[in-house]
Image 1 (tube, rainbow, N blue to C red):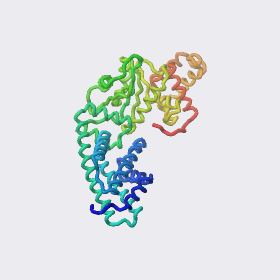
Image 2 (image 1 turned 30 degrees about the vertical axis):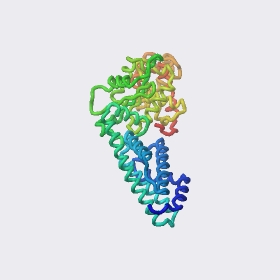
Image 3 (image 1 turned 180 degrees about the horizontal axis):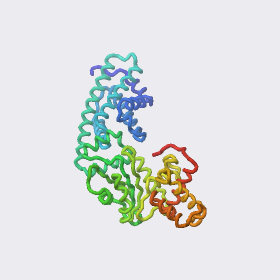
Image 4 (image 1 turned 45 degrees about the horizontal axis):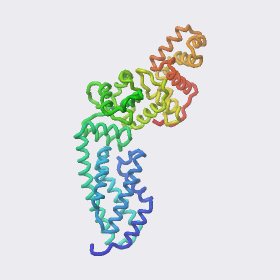
Length: 402
């Protein structure tokens, strides 16, 4: 450049950096025009806004000073690219987001400086073209390198995949599918998510090896789908095929562990399932944990309801707990359960229903077989009581938090 940049550039720069609506306009445009970003959950938006604000300030500074991207800028772009490779957001979508942001920046400059001279306008266009070309090269290279590193250390890559799933860091199911394909795996969908921890206070926290041991015991022989394991603090987290749910109680019982298993959730809801299971382990009373048994999603939903945390609608909780008892033709079992819960004993319930005590006890055994809940067990009795109360009173209010 032979001429000093005009003062209008600095004025426009200051106005745009000080106006939060510019960053919001960039985020809104990216969200609207790049489908991967439209699928981001709310927890990821602050990061998008922060990157947009930083990029806006840097690009406007380069325009106002006739500068170029420096080593610190390139390091940051490479770091962003590596993070996107790790969380599965496609590099093409990331680069398109920057192009969309550049268009918004140009429109905002034009709106604030309708009389912008040709030299300043050419400088803006040149700065954007050079910057976008440079960051595209740097980010594509860093993205490819990180992807290769992840694929090379497959064990670590699979663990990071589950880490991102339970943290909700995937932009979309499509991005997750692309990432799984690069790793050569097919994940179970729907799946079984297990969160487990040692029961003895003097037991060490589970290292990744312990989580892997659990995975080997539960996943069974290799098949079409891939099971995953990772660790969160003192807890192991496992993503398993649905069929593995039947073995969880026995495997944890052998190791003196307790856990909560949520079944049937799709991969895009794993973060919600993990939060539900982890909250259940945090809040469940000691008597809810029985040797050879684990908490289920029904238990977790009841605990969430009792704790005032996001849970499914009450009528859904009732269906989860009661299961087949809610089907037509099993009213006699529901009546037996209600009489037993209300009276507190099999003999009193039998008298109330004009049954022989042995007939009442047989019905209680059938309830246990059908629901997996023994009405004589204190915790199971509580969950059954809550479920039948919800059903009898017809509660239906409440959003589906899961």
